[in-house]
Image (cartoon, rainbow, N blue to C red; front, side):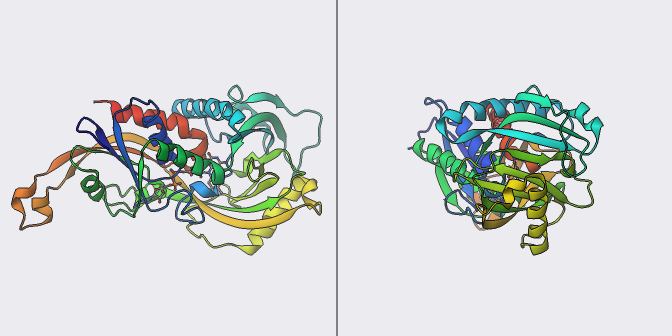
Length: 362
Ligand code: FAD
């Protein structure tokens, strides 16, 4: 039960970002927050919905793109957190090989000290005309077990879940009650949520094939494919999954501004062929295709938005003309946390800590 001294927090969004923020916020048993998560899609009920990204991810820790201070902090914090979880069975160690089309890309591996056992591949043939390769050990999780775990942790801490689509931040403020703080963790939903309407948000379409292939033990990534400016939109990777045992996610595509969530059959064929070209063990009769997936990575021009905004919420007198005495305009604090694109899992703990710090700052 909420007491009068508790701070009401309403989190919009139950993807990995909203859930991790709620987890960090309620991690101290003595915390003083009354947390409600309102979301259209919620773990365990909406895992096959393409309206959110979190169920469709790889999800391994493997940074992309150029260095920036914020990304370095989020990725390093999250790597350590996920690595420490390995004994629980929720995450696993994942030996990885990554390949690059250009030797100069080796100069841009700012994350090599964050993972384990990093080395440059030398004196070995490289697949698909690649010019350079590296080996490292990283960490991976399976969204279908990890998201329900996050939710069950929050259930046990008394966090309330409401399955509902909201039209606007104002609606959230009304549900949250007087003096609530709102956290906006809506992913691509930030583009259409009234009061946010962030047109910098865009999807990066990712098509995948989920297989049973227990003989594939190693993650392989053709990193040069994961380039938003690449015209092919192809990405070649395979990520063995911690759960269900023996399964592997094959990818994929990396198609910015493509909203199409339907399955493209020639693309599925291409994914399997490219993956088998880098890992011939996939051609074994042990391999079984289990399902196909299409998800939209919730990207944002300029990177994720993690910042505070104060919004004006109209009083009821403005919303309902006949009820002039029922309240006036008020200011509501909103902590935005969306736009993580292809890196929502691998940034999640570090970004959630920053969001909570913003929530707690005066
Ligand atoms: P989402 O998971 O999209 O959640 C948004 C939440 O907001 C949902 O609960 C939704 O219902 C809710 N919502 C939105 N609008 C409203 C509204 N108006 N009212 C109420 N609720 C609303 N990341 C990695 O770190 N590593 C990987 O290996 C990786 N691989 C990927 C592979 C693919 C194919 C794809 C598609 C993604 C991959 N990602 C990976 C990216 C990762 O999945 C996302 O970055 C992450 O899931 C984003 O989480 P989120 O919580 O911000 O958004």
